[in-house]
Amino acid sequence: MKIGSEEARRTLPDLLDRAHAGEHLIITKRGTPYAELGPLRTCDDTSRSAGFLALRGTGAGLWGDRAGEWVANLRDEWS
Image 1 (spheres, rainbow, N blue to C red):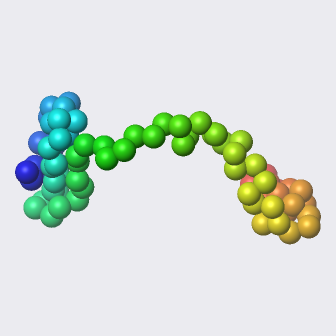
Image 2 (image 1 turned 180 degrees about the vertical axis):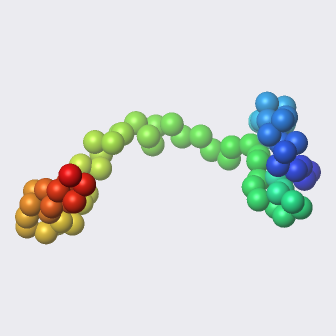
């Protein structure tokens, strides 16, 4: 089913219920398809349990050998 963006804005709670029930909806803007609203295929909340700290160390080497100096220079640009 296709629905205009303004109508989607006005009827969002109903559209969410319909999507949850399995219906797929296409939201259009001036007749052009912009978004699809439908049921979740999977919902694995356990993948998010690691949180922000799981990223610790993933940028090692990104700033070179003098990361503190690099950040201080960036900070000074805004002072």
